[in-house]
Image (cartoon, rainbow, N blue to C red; front, top):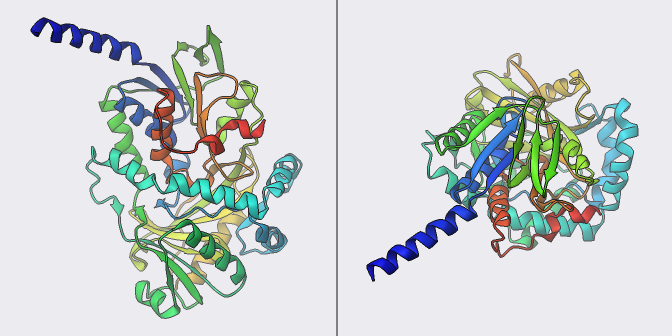
Length: 428
């Protein structure tokens, strides 16, 4: 009996070793590190590559929201009538770099085709499917960390005035249909929650179970340090090519060549260059987002507050009051827009009295697809390459659940989820 047990153990150990993959991840943001951590949980060896320092892009500069309610997409029929006014308004949430318009036209036509009620509801349903699992997936990673009060469970509040109230009503209706927990607020309730906000609002909604971090960079660093502690490696190298040898992916930098069993592409707005190299025409575009800080003003509000009409929000952070928002289409190479920074300053002062001069200015890139669903899953042409990008405003929220899904896909494990809507095949 003892010998039989030893033989069984030996076979189990051999099976485990055979199932252990060497996996390369291109991209050292929140998607990359969450993919890596879930792959490590399954015993795989993981190396992350990035030309920049880990967590230095959108994973640093985001609003810090964990937003499991945010299932209503931008591709909505009502948005089409609002776009001209948004572009013309100096306080509006949308802007274009006009030298980028010719490159935007194909993407914009694809976006227009997705602005039907049917496509809107398709996106909302499948965003809700993964958003509903977003916080539990993070909890699996956070249980191994000392978060030092970096993640705060104080809810997230949205406010609005009666302009374009039909759009707000549509959002509430869709979330109700999906079963999202939301509490509508009247002006008195808004004032009771956040008394320092000027009375610019007619109504709002409160998501009590949503969370935020007061320092995305520090949360990311803890996740990244955990990855290193578990034997992971990071190489600061720009990846120039992805080739194959007998179906095994080969990652090439300027100076080195690495052979892997599997590769995950998780480099956000920079992912299209690699997917194009794999003969997939994935219509990824770049939403440029900005932030500024008002030092010493973080105590003016006690939770993130988003002003829906102007498409911006404020989050109390260790660095100060972070003001984030606007959508600017202008690609990866255009310089920052002073007008967009002024937009944030003016909007913040419209909402709060007594703000000083702003401190720093930051521009980052959000990877966005015309149907506002991410790409999660295997490449169309190469079974050993997997994608985890295109999460637009929700890359931070969806980092952990995307990583968990990809880790299961790599081992052909069942997820009990409908995953076709996230496949790159939808663009074939």
